[in-house]
Structures are given as structure tokens and as C-alpha cells.
Amino acid sequence: MTDAAEDWIRSWSSSISERAAAAHELSDRVARLTVDAADVDHLVTATVNGSDSESARAEGPEPHPRHAPVPR
Image 1 (cartoon, helix red, strand yellow):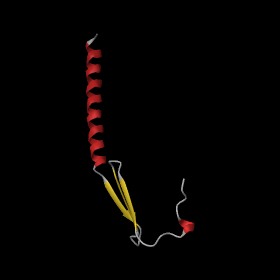
Image 2 (image 1 turned 30 degrees about the vertical axis):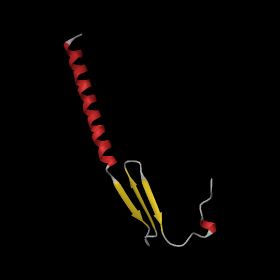
Image 3 (image 1 turned 45 degrees about the vertical axis):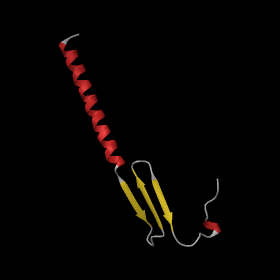
Image 4 (image 1 turned 180 degrees about the horizontal axis):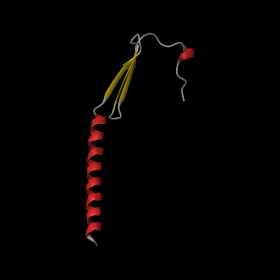
């Protein structure tokens, strides 16, 4: 193998390692994200985070049957 080919392989291998480290760092940063949202009256709130868990809470009267979710 020529020196140029060996240099190219070393460079390519190094760039792959750097990209893998950057992807791991980005994954960690996303896992730490959390977003909370609520409607204007704070009757419904939702929390979503980057680690694939979510929660929702509703307060107040039961919805009118016309607005209730349809079972699947």
C-alpha cells in the first residue's frame, strides 16, 4: 500500500471516530432536553423530554361525550 493510501485511511478512520463522538455527545444533550406546555387556562399540561418519556395531565370537568376520544 502506498503512503498516500495509508494516510487517506488514517484520515478517514479519524474522521469516523470524531463523528461517532459528536453523535454520542448530541444524543446525551437531546436526552437531557425537557419541554413543558399548557393551554391558556392551565387545564391541560404536557411534558415531553428527550429520553422518550412523556406525561400529560388534564384538570376540570369531564369532556362532553361528543368531544370524548373514540376508543380504538
